[in-house]
Amino acid sequence: MEVVVFTYVLEMVCIVAFAFSGVLVESNRGKDIVSILLLGWVTALGGGTLRDLIINTEQVFWIRDPTYFWVALLSSCLAFFLITEIRKSKVEKMVTLFDTIGGLAVFCFGNGKAIFSRFCCLCCY
Image 1 (cartoon, helix red, strand yellow):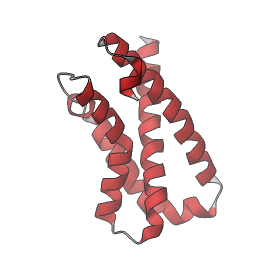
Image 2 (cartoon, rainbow, N blue to C red; image 1 turned 180 degrees about the vertical axis):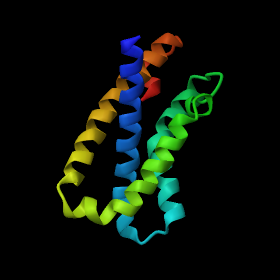
Image 3 (tube, rainbow, N blue to C red; image 1 turned 120 degrees about the vertical axis):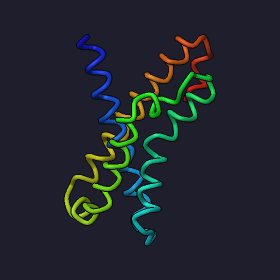
């Protein structure tokens, strides 16, 4: 049970880090809040959505559990409003670190899901 909770929390941290990194990259280009929210959301959830479509799961993960959707959307919104504070402080480097750790974690989760679905590991990353 503790492993499932740890995995779920780690997935949420990865979603937040990916949303923040998507907003950080696009915030310098003068986009409005709607486009920033969309780009943060796509950055946070796009890879897992594509993975679930490739391995043909019954439902995409963020439709099965809408918490992923809301965490990505709220993280993107929070990053949009805190972007100047993030850039002023050293938090930007921490977001990059979490983004890197998140990429590794998502790679491991994706491979686990691919093996469980009897697919080649490389098709899910």
